[in-house]
Amino acid sequence: MTAVEAVVFDVGGVLLDWSPEYLYRRLIPDEVERRRFLTEVCTPEWNQMQDAGRPWAVAVQELVAKFPEHEELITAYDTHWEETVAGPIEPTVEILRELRAAGVPVYALTNFSSEKWRVAKRRWKFLQEFDGEVVSGDVGVIKPDPRIYRILIDRYALQPQRTLYTDDLPENVDQARRLGFQAELFTTPESLRDRLGGLGLIR
Image (cartoon, rainbow, N blue to C red):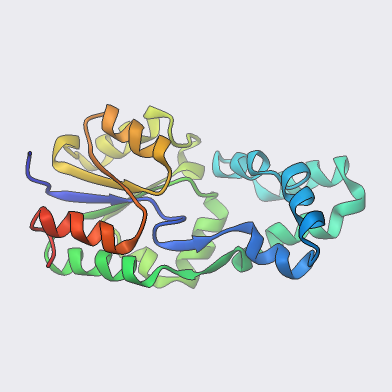
């Protein structure tokens, strides 16, 4: 196997423990009502449009127009967004820092709203430690579209066959492999550490 010279991290589900459930458990205690709201009103597809570059103000305005009875709950997704993050996944953050200490370049390739990425970087300082980043909201393309991987490759002159990519979503890992990356489906920090240790990148 070709030696790995750089590592690319997804963020949500790998470095940050993110889920709208964390916010809406407080706002909608009833599980059935909460599930209905998150599948019929503030849907994953609606949130994904912010990851693709739609401004949050526009997103909220459009959804409130459609569901005016839920205005306060819809607006909360924007104004209380930080509550959708339980916190860093600390063992993975430690891996990131060990790689940096070993001189291995580390990059972020993430589906993330531009606005919320700036919020996250201020709140969780380790997100400022990458050697480079490609954020879907900045470039208007979301994974697993191959174009966003190519932006990463071109921007940082990466050789996919010498780069390990990790993500918690199988479709994103599969796309990375199709483009020539070595790739690891993220399941636990321990399994990622084992893979990186096997490559001789960390102990």
